[in-house]
Image 1 (cartoon, rainbow, N blue to C red):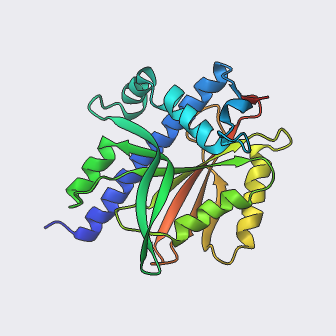
Image 2: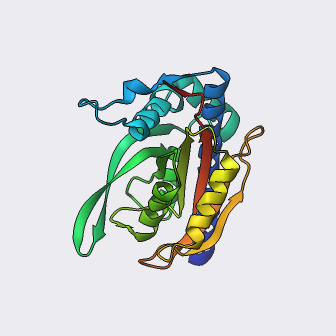
Image 3: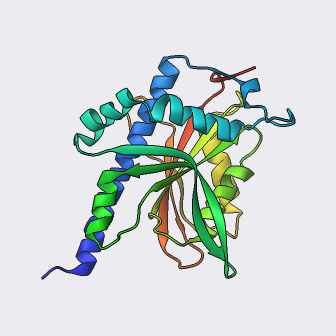
Length: 245
């Protein structure tokens, strides 16, 4: 007889394995971008009124359009990471997922939404019939870490109306040359240690997903609305030579 708790544990392990494959692919695309010395002029991200730079949205869109969603790269994922040719991977910018706050339904816009058919298959076998995805939240890191940590707070607080994995992703686009991924990690951990609204089980600890890239971390927190534990994969991308004036 199938033990439901054992299946849940097994499905969670399979989910984590596939999520970490996706994270490895994202790192692969970043490394490819750096190797190609790709640059983006800052002024292409000016809003129509030329009053502010939409860097966060613009860089995420460029990352999806120029690297994550490119067929050659996706085929690399199938051949070398997933090693399953029947598994497909899809990326979208600013996809919407609703959540409920104080009895009111509101919209949350995901910076990079990732759908992988292997993940969907795992969840469908546990009875879930809705689309499943990995949410990647992105932030410009230029002057402090409060906005980056604010995304962690949202992950803790928002009760989503459709399935949300117990695994989340965050990307820091570091554009301040005085920052390193180590200083950013330390700054975020310091911020978390003094934030009473975020229950942190484990602060950011190194976790390597791909050879040659050590700017990746894992943290563990509790959802405030149900006390369930979830993990966040953090990728610190050095964009100091990617974004140019």
